[in-house]
Each structure stands twice: as structure tokens, then as C-alpha cells.
Length: 266
Image (cartoon, rainbow, N blue to C red):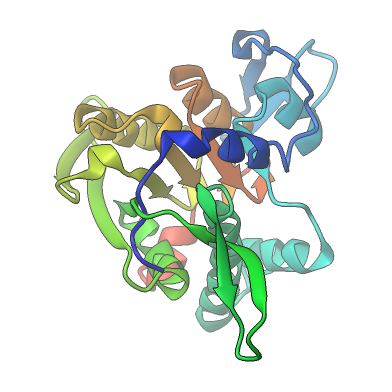
């Protein structure tokens, strides 16, 4: 698939597609109404009224249509289980991670703008279909985000991919940008931002700020992630209400070993 250009004329199409995963209606949500409680093992619970943890559907309703979850099925659940299992071999881990990444990437591409297209079949008949518009790109947050690059290239062979390197400062523990390289016209593109694990959300927030500095509008950023904590999703949407987060699961405990296990540095 070639790189694709954003067209404001098809914003209605994008808006219609973006409600596929959330049955929220027109509910207006204030993310400040969600209280996040951190536990001693870095687990996070989301409790709107302090009465109990909410499941993915409830959290999705609270955060609005910007949070999108892949429809859960047994296949996705099995992949999530294998990735979380500490006894999983690295070979099985990478294999299952790549499968889950591909599913997320495919759904991420489903959020991009498209136009109607008529083609002629080998039998001479006309077929009414669609085609993606030109002007999209991917951006991976190094290092774990690079695990998702091949999945994107498998779907879009010629798509351009930028990179951001963000690390925590040893003294302040704040996320700091060390490197950023993007296509020169990224401000005109819709960005698929890739980062598999959303824990605190701080790294993604810094990455989005860098993209905004390069002219990208938050509403043109689709964050592709495998796992997220309630705190991570809340922090990102609270900071950038127009961003879209696509993930497979929102759970108090994220598999933060993902990058080390995937690249064999654990």
C-alpha cells in the first residue's frame, strides 16, 4: 500500500468508522472523574466511585470513543495469555507477539481515510470498492515500538516510518527525547504511532508532543498498542483528548517485560 494523503473531505467517513469499537453513543465524559489507585506492585485500578474495578467496556465508556478495543475472542485471549506467561519461550513469545501486532495493525489501518473506487474484474465486470488515500506514515517509539514496524510493512509495503527515542532521565525520572527522525512532510500525514505497552503513558505523551512540534495534529494520530493500563490510557487521553488509542486490552498490570523478551535482552 502506498503512503496516503489525508483529505478533509472524507473526515465523515473516518468519524463513522471510529465508533466501531465503542458503544458510547453521544456520552460526554470528563476523564477527571476517573480516580486511579496505585498498588504496591505497580498495579493500577480504575474506580469511578471507589466501588470496584471497571472492566474494559466500562473504561472504554468512561474515556469515550478515543479509546478503541479490538473485539475480544478466544484467539486474541490465547495470544495475550502466552505473552503474559513467564514460562513462554522466546520463540513462542515473538511468534505470538507478531500475530497480535498484525491484528492491531490491521485494525489501525481500518481507521484511515479511504475513497470509493470502481475497478474492472478479469471477466469484464465492474466492481464498486474502496481504496486508501495517500498520505499516511508510521512512527515507532524506540526500542519496543520497533517490534511493530514489520507488521506495518507487511500490510503497507511502501509506507514511510519515522522513529523517536525517549528515555527516562536518571536524576529526574522524567521522559526525555534523545532522537527524532520523521518524513519531512509528516505534518500533512496521518500518523500510526507504535508502542506496544502503555504503562504510565509518559513516554507516549512526550512522543506526541514531539509530533505536535513537527506540525502533526493530535486528531491525526492513531496510537497502536498491545496492552495498556487504565492509568496509561487515562493520562494520554487527558493530555490529548483528540488522539485515538487502539489496543487489545486495558488491565491493571501490563506485561512490561515485552521489549526485553521480544529482542532477547531479558
